[in-house]
Image (cartoon, rainbow, N blue to C red; front, side, top):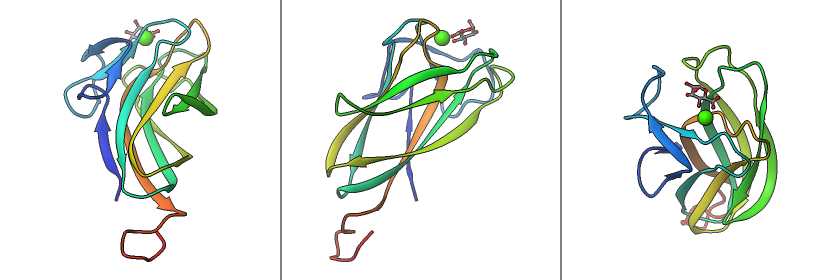
Length: 140
Ligand code: GCU
Ligand code: CA
């Protein structure tokens, strides 16, 4: 099962404010990052093994304009994605992505590439699903 990392819980960081004004979020709030290029939401996850990790990022974008973002793993860009409009700031959806990780503490950041900034970010679900060993010598 994935581990859930809330955007409002340290050591996560939010280049903006932790807000509560749009219902439906998990935990005690969500990250409303600034409307600017590079205004990121970052999570620090623990990878039990190296391999392919499945990310589930929950977000809301109440505008009709998709918000593109870089995905940074330990500070390096590994992919990009977009947070499309979800219809309302209270409509939260989860986008699934995969990235490669090494074992141990790993930062995963969403860093927007346009002046619109990010969608509002609720949490990141993280699970290494393939490509390493599960710690018992068996593939994960
Ligand atoms: C509104 C909304 C915020 C959102 C912002 C944005 O101000 O209330 O939650 O982050 O728009 O466009 O990014
Ligand atoms: Ca915002």
